[in-house]
Image (tube, rainbow, N blue to C red; front, side):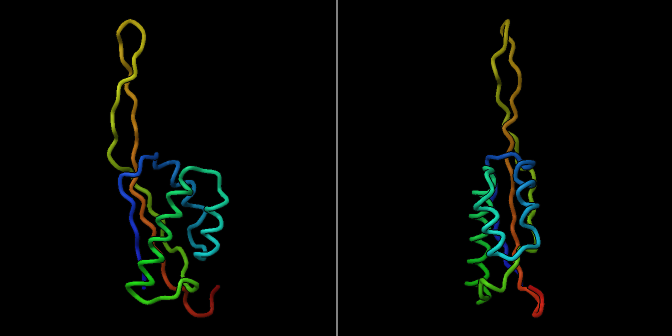
Length: 115
């Protein structure tokens, strides 16, 4: 069985999140959580929360033990972009794009013998 958790409209660039997401894809939940807790990136905080939520969903919906789970998917997509203006010389303005992300983490049960 698979359990999923989403975090939509996260105020961080999808490029930054996908770098950290690639670190945990395919790893056991315990190992993935340890990697995220020791990664000095802003995206790791968000991914820890989403990973914990996905594990809690698996425990409550499907009654699966947390130790038998692994991270099967980490999807990071672009959300809407907030456009702002930055004042420049001679009354001009340059655009500043504040990007958002949609983060999805899916955890699944390991097939028997693998670890």
